[in-house]
Amino acid sequence: MKIFIILAFTVLSACSWFHKKPPPAPVPPQLIVTGVPAGSIVFIDGTQRGPAAELNDRPQSLSVVEGTHVVEVHRGDTVVYRENIYVKNGEKRVVTVLSGSNRE
Image 1 (cartoon, rainbow, N blue to C red):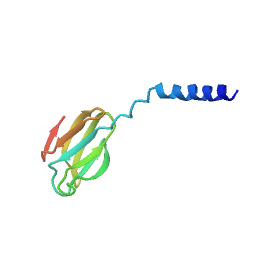
Image 2 (cartoon, rainbow, N blue to C red):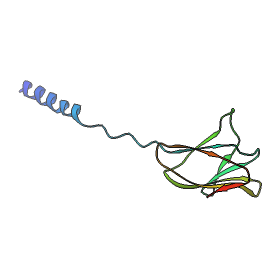
Image 3 (cartoon, rainbow, N blue to C red):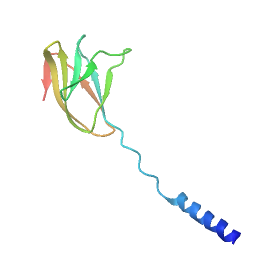
Image 4 (cartoon, helix red, strand yellow):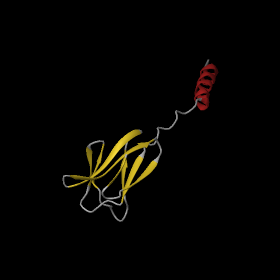
C-alpha cells in the first residue's frame, strides 16, 4: 500500500512538470515625451499626467493602455501641442513636441 501511495504521488507530481506556463502579461505601451517648453504640463486623453520637464536629463516616459490617445502639452491655459497617437502593447513611442504645432 505504501508503494502505491508513493507511486501515485510521484505520478501526480510529474504531471505538473508538463503543464504549460501561462503566457506572460502584455507589457503596457509607453509614450516618451521630448522637446517640451519649460513650465509645460502633459495631458493624456484629457487627464493631467504631470509636468512635461525632463527628469535628470531624461525625457518623461508615461505608461498608457493599448489604443488611440490624445497627447496634449499645456502651458498655462494654452494648448501648445496636440497629437492623436496609436500605441500597441510593448511599444515605446517617442512624442517629439514642436511648440505651437499639432499632429492629428
